[in-house]
Image (cartoon, rainbow, N blue to C red; front, side):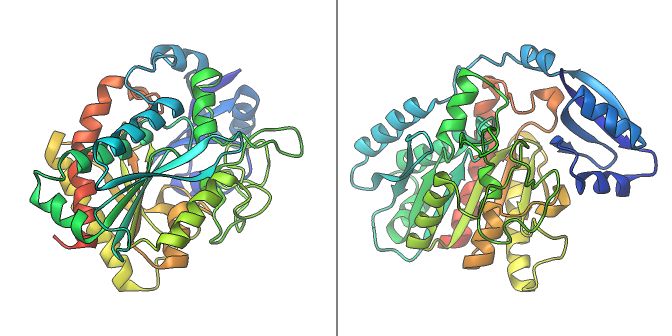
Length: 376
């Protein structure tokens, strides 16, 4: 049986970090100052307890799923409905919007990008990505709503008009359509893509498959075990979904990148693979400043707090998106972990009535990032 559990260390946070750096096969959901929240089997929980940690079962996974209506899809896109809505958006605004198929998934679904802007040869370009991880449904909706907002305000907002005259915004709301569809039909908490691994297991974590420092960690949060939730794959860019993003970024040479995930209400900047700071202090300060502006913008809407921290401050990861876009292309690259803060508020199963307020607080944050890149 699978459970949701809290793990505490009798001797403090250092032991929790040692656990994160182990290979216990845990699915880590939350990292708090004094505890972790994980999904684990009862056998895994017993092993962790035998290692000297305090393990408290919060609820069974089955109870968690039933508590938050795992089958409730109202307000959330499927891969098919997202394609329909993206194409309709472009059709309503043909002078400034185009849908591009940037690749195909393992199961041959299209991976779609919406290019927004008056020019197709601009050197100022922003990229917004969503849904690397299948179960993070809200991470589809926020980039989609951003695209909708830009297009619907292209003629009424002087700021949006200026940005779309001088630059382009590219939006890829669903990097992992196969995994996302699997969460709708079979397993609401599925995380990875749907690649078939050599040992018979399924799935690679797309956000551990990028090329910068790929494979340099072998821990619970960047695993070389195919059955684990954070399996890094057999090689960098082994997955077609990740290659699609790689090819888009390599071709368009973006000036800034923002990728959406859930949950925990965080704004993360590189590095993820190490606790060392970025050597270039000017770049680090720029990303911290942009993240701080976004944090303030979010807080000013509904009073929600999103914490700004280096990615490895959450937990170490190797081969993630923003380490790659910054490490290879040297552009400001941020990750936003959206609502809610805790699993008790829904975790990965954010109630549909939270879609709109999550967008409302993230709208000014996304626009502030565009403004910093394009110039206000």
